[in-house]
Length: 280
Image (cartoon, one colour):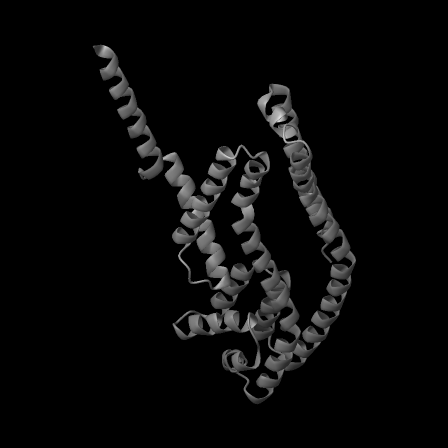
């Protein structure tokens, strides 16, 4: 007689614990969800993406859950191995977009300084010169300059707005340009000439960075191929011998081999990415 009541109490307790972990504010899963959506919101803000981070995170979790469910139903090891990769795809895509945006802005800085120097020759006010240069530059630099000008028009001091813009973009070249403008503005002197010299320096730095990117492009492509190769091999082996991979998954020693292989794969990809990232 007591067995059904014990089962009901156990199921109810389990449901309450799961509900707390999933929806309760301050719960572990809730905190993970908040951190993930806040990270997405920072990426979206930087890239000027208007999509809701909560909506994107929910769709991403649903897609990963569906992929894991299909892997379990079909007993497909390759599908299950793709789940950790799928979990990191949005962050990798956003980080790649941010990197490309910073690279594009670095390429636009030298022409923008030339435009700014010419504007200062007719209008000595640096705030007006920056505002007038918006229509003469292309995105993504135009978006950042437009945001800076809007903050100044809303009452923010120009120096603080430039510091905030540098901290937001996190680009060494952009920060150096903002620092040059701030120092030249406070120290006086021939600001148009200083900006023209800075523009020439940035063009030379961009040329050197282009050489480095060409030299490292081959290494990046090789890293990408080597990172995908294990999954291709697992898929090919599963087709040749369907019992090979499930045999590894069903035994303790096989699971240890798979775990060690996954750890080695992650370590090698991280190390390769660190090696080919060259700064000048």
